[in-house]
Image 1 (cartoon, rainbow, N blue to C red):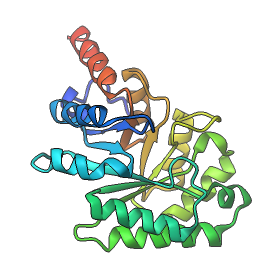
Image 2: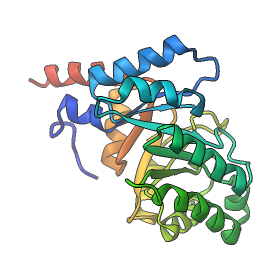
Image 3: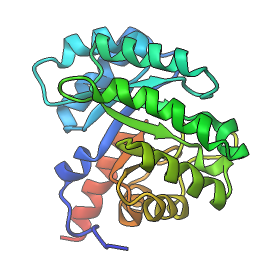
Length: 236
């Protein structure tokens, strides 16, 4: 574990964060506000439902902020054909990154063939783009035991996805934990890890990065940054 609390600036922390608004009741005003907040704070992406990608692309087209669209969210139970179609729709609308919920049944049952084929097909779509679109695969780590997490991470790494993500934040089992992030990083060292789900404070965000997360997804991104600013000021 690396202690990064005193080695990272506010702007660097913001650059790790996907500023997220996936509430189905979100409206145009909320999405526009999300984009302007991302520009102001310098977040890595805005993470939104596909319905909003054209609007977000219009607002962010002259900025460095990336667009992160979700696929098969939040259940992950769609067929491979549907997930491929959703990924294509999001990418053609302007997504730079895709967060796709994995097929949880195949993880729980240990069905390597089904899981690998589905990840392969969506990954192929993402990586065929120029430039390649990043694929993050959500495994709902809180709903899995350690053996299942290791299995999912092993398959994802073999397929060659870019990121493995802990959670949707909507599963009843819970969200990200430091222990899960650490296990995921150890199980798939060639993949990056995104921690998401219940990350609402600067202290928790830093703990996730120290455990090995390469990205943080949060709907409380501004609160995290403001708390981190206060922590930095306290530490002189």
